[in-house]
Length: 120
Image (cartoon, rainbow, N blue to C red; front, side, top):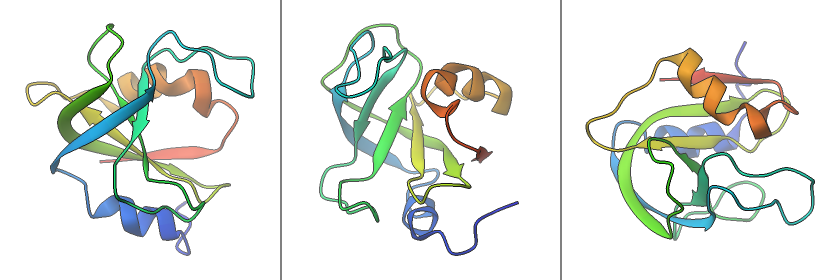
């Protein structure tokens, strides 16, 4: 099931398969500013984009255990939230690709509160 009225999915699809740079504002190991959980992967945003929530388009960066500040990588998937118009990009190094299951396992720390689907 896909939310066909998802503005964030339309925006995210433009980046699928492309190399992008993301700014990491929540590095691996950091605590969420409002909710009580720790980021298990680097999490950030695509500069100069606008998501439906008014902020820049969010992105998970998978493939490293080191905290990062800025990184280039390839958009391998989209986390399409079915109950929230706030989709996320899944970015990885050029030489890495993960299965749906591997991606889900890596991002579960945050996505467990949402109904979502991985789109590749």
